[in-house]
Length: 187
Image (cartoon, rainbow, N blue to C red):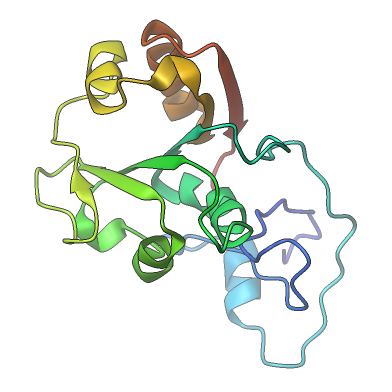
């Protein structure tokens, strides 16, 4: 960013893609890091220190997964979904957002072949390509109702630290045995 601070971003492109893409939220106020990104022109160079992380799906595509995204927590899942173009994996995605306007990647999600559930805090209906998860808070009982076979899925939770803590507890309370988390703060 403008202060020389390194930032971490989630890749949204498929593994092995020739073009690397990242997803960022640009809600006001826009930070200096995001202003720097938004000011880039085609052909501008960036320095990337490394590509790493352990927030990855199980190697065995027969392992069913539940992906839970709170807000911009959707970004790491885009690479996961793009990496399964044939839709071979049993994927359920629960996407929590404030409103339908804040649902990012709607077209890509539709093409993914995953079962998409959307819970919108304002009570509005999600796009027709997504199942409405209602407006109730996602606790263990709600999660078990939405994904009855949660105990047989590996669960991944991504979002703000507070959201991840709450959703991880809900998943465990609903019977999830393995819960992987990726929390981050905005900047």
